[in-house]
Structure formats: C-alpha cells, structure tokens
Length: 222
Length: 375
Figure (cartoon, helix red, strand yellow):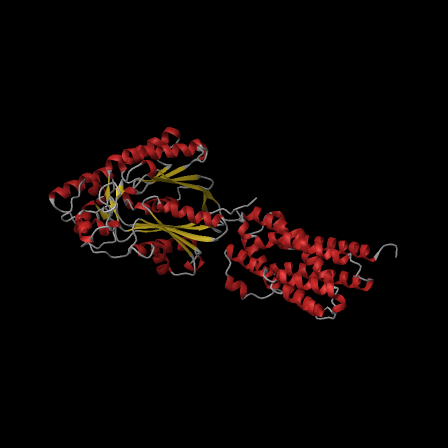
C-alpha cells in the first residue's frame, strides 16, 4: 500500500459520490427540475415520498447507536448525538408539505415507495449488526446529499415554481445541518479508528445506499 | 435573501340576493312612498344612475337572508369557479361594513356557516375599501408561504337599515337619503393561491396599496354617532338605545358636501402611484373603478384619462348601474363580472380602484392576467 488507509477511503468514497451524481442526473424528477419543467405536484410528490423515509432516519441511527459496543464509544456517541439532532426533521418537511397545499392527514397516512422500502429495510438491517461501522458510508451519501444538493434543489424549485422560503424549509435547512454532520463524519473517517476491513464495509454500504436512494427518487414517477 | 411566493386570483364568484329590483320596485321594499320622499328618491336615483339592484328583502320589506349567508354563497361560487371545496381553504379574510351580529366577528360567523377545516380568519371592518384590505392580508399571507390557499369575501346587507322604520320620527335629510336610495345588498369573493389556476387563466396580484387620510379629514360617512365629531356621550354605546335611535344615530349618513374633495383626493392617490412607478401607464390595460354614483364616474374617468390618454370605455369597467352600490362588495362583484365576460386578455393588466368616503381611505390593486400553471 502506497497511501494511508484513510486517504484511500476518501478517494474511494469520492468515486462512489461521482457515480451517484451521474445516476441522479437521470432521475426523472431531477431532470425536470434542471430543465425547469418541474410542477408543484412534482414538489409535493417529492416531499410526500421523502417524508415516509425521513421519519425512519433517527430510528435507524438510534438502533445503530445501540449496536456499538464500548470499544466503539466515539461512534456510539456520534450516533446518539446525530439521532437526537434529526429526530424532529420530518416535522419541518411536513410543514413545507402543508404550506404547498398538501394534506397532513394524507401525508401521515402515506406509505413508502419501493425504493424507500428497500433503503429503510437495508439501513435497519445493517444497524442491527454488531458494531455497524459500515453505516458511515450511508451517512456519507445521505448527509452529503443534504449538504451538497438539497439547498440547490430548494433554490431551483423556488425559481421555477415561485415558492416562498416558508415552503422549502426542509431542503434549505439541510444544507446547514448536514454540512455540520459531514464535518463530523470527516473527523471520524480521518481519526485512525477505521481499519481496512471497516473501510471496505463503508464503501460498500455507500454504494448500496447511493443506489437505493436514487431508486427512491426514481420510484416517485412510478 | 428571503423570497416570497406569488399570489393569484384563481376563482371569482358573486352572490346577489333575489331578483333584480328596478327603480319602481324600491319603495315596496324600503318604504318611503309619501310624496316628498318619492320626489327625493327620484332625484337621487336620477343622479346615481343605478337602474337595477338586489335586496335580501321580500316584496314586503322583510329580510330573507343574513349577511353571512350572502358571504358564504359568494365564496361557494368562487370555490366552484376554481373547482375546489371549502376544505381546501386555509385562510378566510372577510370584509363587511356591518355583520349580522355585533359579536362574534363577521369572519368567524362566515367560517362557521361555510365549514371546511381549521383556517385563519380575519375580519376587515370598514366600508368600501375593506374588501381590498382583506385581499391585501390574504395576498400577503399567501406570498409569505404561510398559506397555499385563501379566500377573500366582501359582503354587505345594508337594506335592513334602509327601511322606513329606521326613518320614522328621525331627522333625516339629504345626508341620509343619498345613501338610502343608493346602497343595496350583495357579496363578491375571490380564491387566492400561490400557484395559478392549473387549467385556466388567473389574475396575478402584483400589489395592493391601501392608504387612510383620516389624519386630515373629518368623518364623512357614519352611523352610530351624532354629528361628525366623535366625542364621549355622542355614540350609540354611550346613551340608552332608545335615545340613540331618537337622535337618528342608527341612520347611515354621508356628508355629501365633501364628496368632490374625495374624488380629487382619489385622483391624487392615483397620480402618486403613477409618479412612483407602481402604475406603468404604457402597460395599464383596464381600470375597474368603484364609485358610489354615476355623478363621480365622469370625474374619475376624466381624472385618470388626463394621465392615460388611451383610456376609453372599452378599458373602463363598472357595473354600478345594474348591480347597484354594494359597498365593500362592489369591487369584487365588478371584477367577477368583468373577468367572466372575457374582456381581459392574457398579459393584460387591471387596476382596481376603491375610494372610501367614510373617513377618506383609498385602496388600489394591480393585477396581471396570466395563463394556466406551467403554460
């Protein structure tokens, strides 16, 4: 090995990210957003679909926290902290949905799309494993999306549909919150506690989550 | 930088109670068929130019509906026009000069009768311009993104207090007759949304401006007070009700001597909107103006034409003559009829103008016709 394990991990994750972004370009709703042909129904449907998975965010992270033993205390602490920070996020999304004319009752009665089912199922299953270090790969994708893409989507929805700030809170907020989270993640990935096997697990989990996340967005239009 | 949404009028409706009443049918409903009153009535009618109006009174002068019922019927017409139901509405802004009851607020009563779900309710109390005050509030909340959909209604039922029993034994001169033979009942409503109508053109609300000049004008139109000068002991709540009635406080009156001044001030307010660039006369296509009587139609028309030479009768709209003067409801009843007549084309702009004599308020709204969402 000519480079340190963490550098390699960073490069490998950057590659997963690049492939993920390529896939996102082909997701129909994101293509319409880019073209400026997206409709208010698209935005409502996006929030509707995201909500069904976002409500699971804190629970799978909490479950992961309880699966870390004392030897992985820093990861357990980070997961507990992260779960606590995010467990009310879906409420913000719900307010946005209502603010663009959606029904809260229908939103709360909604079910996950096929991609969300797969993503949530995978994450809960992974979180049940002892010391699920690989989930840092899931964080990398999900928080990265929030930090790097969500605010841009929000601005574009605002531009195309003439939405008020009060209607895009969830996506705008994630730029700041997830920016902080990706900083925390970076610190863990470069802390020296990630060995080669853990790095492999992180990259694999990132690949799976990237694919399932894209599937969740693709399923909006099915 | 904070961004707001747009606000669009996506549905318009009106409700005018009963059959239209022509000038010969007024006395049967409002009374005042003695020779002197009859002569005054004819004179006032000749001046105001109204030939048809509606009353929520039967042919014997007995009330047939409540003001809140007129409001709800106009709202339902607007919701039908948009193809949605009351359960889709998140805010109701209701304007009236006088609700059916003193308490609760008119908006709450209209919501109670309308049904639907939980919603924000605002009552804009005032006179003619209160409809645009209600519109302004609804538009602002929609633009903020606080509500995706609001409904604005302006509703008036003055006929009840214009009947003879209010005038028996009361000193009522031209200050009361002028309004008695001018005002009538009706309601107009609009649906306000953050997106245009998906299937049909909408009216985008570019801005609403509402200014009071009460700081430099005395009371002009009033009820519930004696004289023009408000002071303790001279309002209907300070004295026994019978005393207030005998003093004629329950008669609605107007100091007609200052109406010329009102028209001049209205033109000045219009000029100011032009001079500050809110109105671009090269791109103003239609004017829908509320005025109480045809006597003021020419003043307003000529006043605006001084700055807007292209103004002609095709660009000027009023339905005062056939729908009557329904106070705050007038501007929405006129907009509804103009809109559904198809006289506005996509891309054209519309100015709504409402002078309010009560204590000199002026409201304007600027609208642009836009195509369906996504077009």
